[in-house]
Image (cartoon, rainbow, N blue to C red; front, side, top):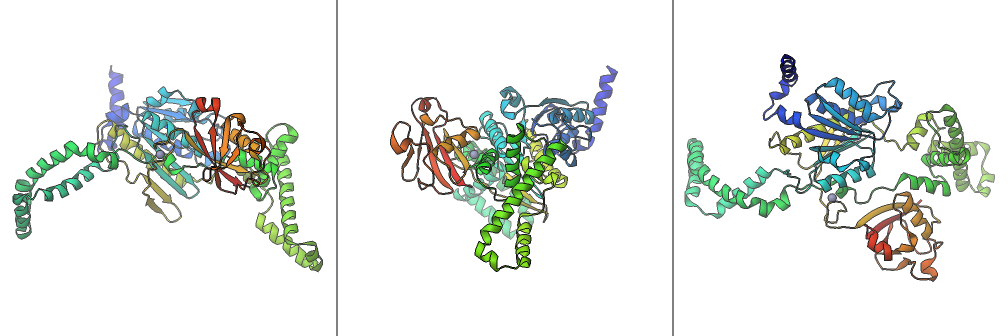
Length: 526
Ligand SMILES: [Zn+2]
């Protein structure tokens, strides 16, 4: 019995300073549960924040293992942790920080988690590093009506977005302020003499202002307010509160899949440094039967050799494109050398290991100082939402619900973001999907289906039709014969240009079975 008491005292000592905050209730925090999806630079910081504040439970989700390059930012990991699952190690370290904490961890894809895991949490915090995972999490949160606090960084910049789904039981925007605005205009409409007189008196007799407000204005205002309140939610709430744009509203068309770019690079000729490395990786895999492991020195050396050769070929091609044979004859050896030096400068020096690793892993520039700023904003927003969910107000969600941070200038910009009526996640459109495909210049109709497969959309070519959404021209119809059913027909021959949109619609069995009734596909040639 005494040990329990001692523990309680220790607990209250730990949280003594935050108890001083107006409206704080440690009970709410210690019964709360937050989910942190992605335990990288942002996720480590956010999980640490909530562990220190005494949250009841943290659910960690991450499918990666720790790499050496994580150690410059991901503060829950230390040298020697390499190779271990991030979620597991983070759970251990958080328990060290706060022994009262409950932590569940999942070394798993967020899409594979049982819904019950999400349902249990009050707030979902997205600390992810790619579009697709964010879009999937956004969808899940909207479906189960859980608030999501999204964040991300690139180099010295970052952003935070609060997503409050409709009917989540949370208010968005300053409901109080909105009500007050309506009350103010409504008071004039009443043409109440007593009120108007009072207003005049206030102007003339400044010393009476306070008393008049109390005696004349406030009772009347309360009356009006009561009426406004009664009808407010029905009449105005739809437009002004309770809804924020979702993450997908901002990313209607996700950028093309990297695997597609890689597939494309193999077919075509590399046009920049990154392409050379991606192509080298594909050649490596073809030659040795496995993907290069950046932790194996031997693989790195071989890959560097391949990439270097691609880079030299690229320099050579550019030289030939710019210097015709006739022109070459007129140049002195000095001038030729200068040309070659210029080209070398344009495409950069020889590869270094870190650069290849960054390119292949599609890594984004990141630094601890910015990660800690962005993650702290996320923690703060999630904290306010947590209190709100439990009937306490320590502040409304940030409004507008999106903030951008530029660390070069030390500038925060709150951005008004717009909810899209045609949003594929929260809007009125059901059964549509936007996809961005990168295709080689000589791509044909068959390649579209191949590219769709690479991006995870398994479509049977004999069950889908391809058309031009603008002039309704037919590109592919498996039910017809002749040119409408020729998978080798080149897209360029069909007059499809870069950044044109084509439409894929299901036929027959697919029409009945497919959840998606229409794919809007942007085609970009590379
Ligand atoms: Zn949306």
